[in-house]
Figure 1 (cartoon, rainbow, N blue to C red):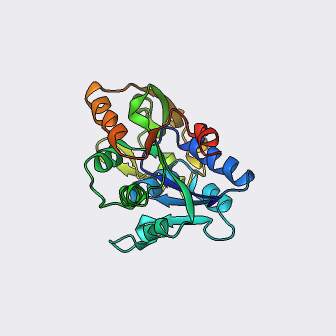
Figure 2 (figure 1 turned 135 degrees about the vertical axis):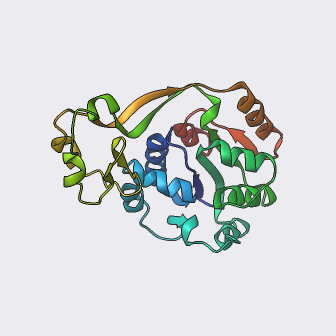
Figure 3 (figure 1 turned 90 degrees about the vertical axis):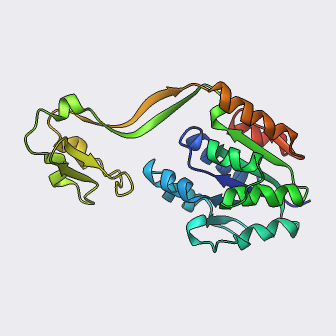
Length: 237
């Protein structure tokens, strides 16, 4: 049987760190992993500072590697691999509510939802971790405390930012473009009031309406729900 895993990553921050750790453990066990990363997933990987880490981990013989939606044609030809016997399972973790909704309704207009659709057709087991199904601890990548920020007339952090991710704003002092932030943390040293914080922990609670949508995944042949990324290590062996 194929010893490779197709791993879909969407634009959810919850369980992202744990998902990357699970991918690394699969690699240590001898599996080859292809990460199929949505456009939002690529952005979130960068924002949380995990993109380079994942790229370094997924260097190896075929089919080990990363397929970014941003590099794919609209037909997502890379998902055709699912019909060649390369993969023994498909994992989607973390799975955003947007991707869940598409999978439930048979919409395949993104890389990861297209991956799931072809997995169903190819009779390949799919393991999905819907982040909105559980009470989860997540983190806001960068947070500016506006009360503390308002003490400055000129933003020293914005002046020192090498990527111009921080920009002065005429009404609320400073704004941040997370896509430009490279986590150099120079802003932390420059801000005299400690107004800038990284990875601020939050708790997100499930919403009954979304839980009803998530339950519909169980009616799709071959789909099983996960409670954590590490559960993959148990179910595929």
